[in-house]
Length: 221
Length: 294
Image (cartoon, rainbow over all chains, first blue to last red; front, side):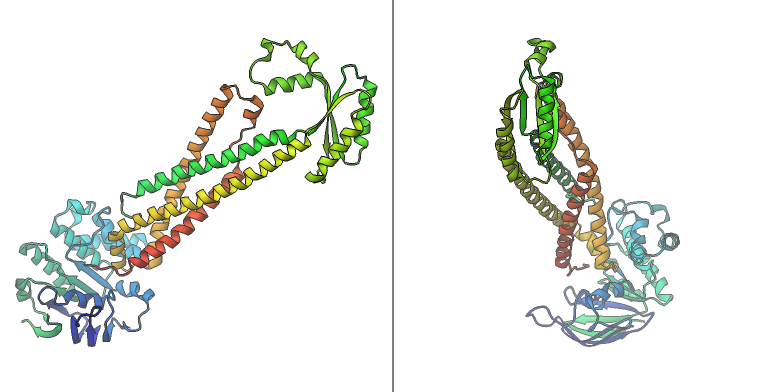
């Protein structure tokens, strides 16, 4: 599903920020990516989603060799990935329903099917009563649940969650984690960056630790 | 797309520029029409003596019609001359001349028009020849040949056409350039939205489409407003000129755009702005290509 072979990434003339990354992520894996700020967690996610190109090595994501992926194919790769980010990235002039509907609109899904899928997701993340609200009227946790629903509504194969609980209290973070776990159990591959050790301790997951550009893998049980 | 601050300036800018362009075109068009009022009248007028007999008039008209270059000959009697004079003067002539006095004052005349195939250079010579030939004819008082004067008018006419066309092209180019600058600001302000669309896998074309459909809506709305405002301003100006004592004949010749002109005008406006905007959107999105999701 995701495969890195001897991947290096450096910016301009600086020393490589990621060095000799070798790992493989299978379908249904729940992987925590941890490391200090600036260690390269976000760069790793950008490489997977083709926002950045590697300096050397080989990356394969969902059967696409990113070395040979053309610019025009990138949007189609991203349609198979759901993104949940720390700052939610919701459109302020669209309601909860409309925000969640966006990936389906972009993929030209018919309106009746969109409505069914969006309503189902809204129910799963517990936002039924707020579906006509605009993001500015929602709490941080509600906005993040909207972002999660948007990331999952089009049945992606991978979810990249970059500090999804960074702005939330521990109680809300646990709620968010429960949603992710539920989807992971259904076979969704999730890569999550977090600084919250308590969330990592509660999980039964693979852990990638990035330090000084290198990645080390461990397993939390 | 986001409701950002440059949306309304863009719309207003489009509408105001559109009104300016239409008013500029109407000035150009009606200047030509005003010149046309003069230009369409025959430059050769043969004024008849007060005591010219019916036989002399008929003989003169027959002789003129027999000329190979002459297309038509029109006799204007005293009543028609008085009516025409009164319609071209807004202020009431009755205040100092009665209808009978005016009719007595104005002579009968014959207007001569030439065949349309004869070009403007030859016309002057033909009118000159006709003047020489008929100035001493029986019943003729005076032959007035205005063709030289009208030739000069024709030059002004051509100059105005050319200057008007140049001004139109310059203003249209400036308008589309300014529209594209505003559109660039609009796109930059929409950057957070574009980032989200990119994140969710929107293709470049689908993002183009969002901006172009937004722009198209503004263009259609702006065009409707432009047309309405221009028409109201034109009507107000015409009423003002009509009341201000300007020649009624001239005021009646003032025209708004017809359907064909409006279609061509808005077609050019749309093509120019949309083409310019497409390049702007393309350039702006290429700059925003390295979007980050963090």
